Length: 386
Image 1 (tube, rainbow, N blue to C red):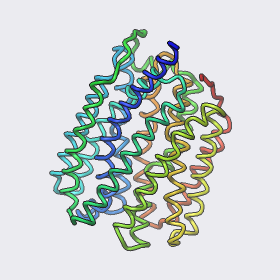
Image 2: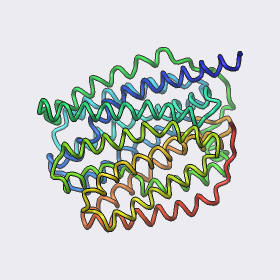
Image 3: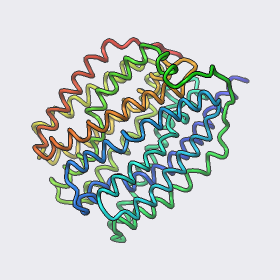
Image 4: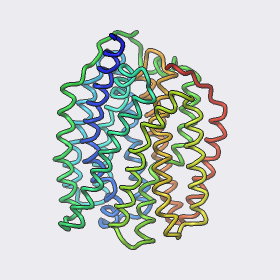
């Protein structure tokens, strides 16, 4: 009975963290799908949009690593989660004030510094979840539900009230304030770990963990933020921003509906099998785009397929990282975010340049990267801790 109560309390904390993510993602996903159009309206090109996709994660990657490491050596995690959400709220107000696409890139990068919260938040999930696939899946489901609500809201504001991009961004910034409220009720587990430097902590990480992070980095080079280009492609094919936003909502909804199921599935059959399915599905999707770039039915289907890719991979990559992590859980997750975040910078810029040359060329490039990551995944040795 005591174990059941402990597990219930653990998932209560995960739900509270998920509620914070939900409010934050309502705000974030009100902004994300309109950013490509906002940048284009300010004179930005495909290269600028690719750079945006990379900078959103790349420049914040060091802070994710620092946040995870500090939460380990301090024995406290919630304070870094609270700080991260606060930074994001303030930064969105600056995005509202931006007057050029260069300023948008700068303030979006600043907003991503708030991702200092990610590794400490995920470490709290590890601390409280016995079934980590289910725990990460539950949190991701609430997070992605916020994305669905945010996109529906932006569609409503854009279509019904004909609000401009700036007005929508301001409303999003105000909504994100509510992400701080659930954090006051999250219980932080106090603990002590060996005090070690950041470099030593990274050096001592499990070699199996480092190998999987290497694979994740290659997969990230392909799956760096593809949804931005899918939104642009939908606009070109259907000649409608509204349809593009609706399809983006479909992508988020599919992810939200299936992510908890695939997380629980990885608890039962292993992370590697589920991740292999996700990597394979992404490879098929990227390869088909080489031939079906201008096909309206396939464009619609691609948002559903890409939602399944997210549901299969997003939370289960973190669950596998947690399985391979030792005591330095925050550092392990932070290093994962650091490496995958850094590769987002060249990934977005290269893909954006290839997009300006030819969308088909970009998808050939993404297919090659996806194939390499899939082959390397075969040699992963997972350690299940259920």
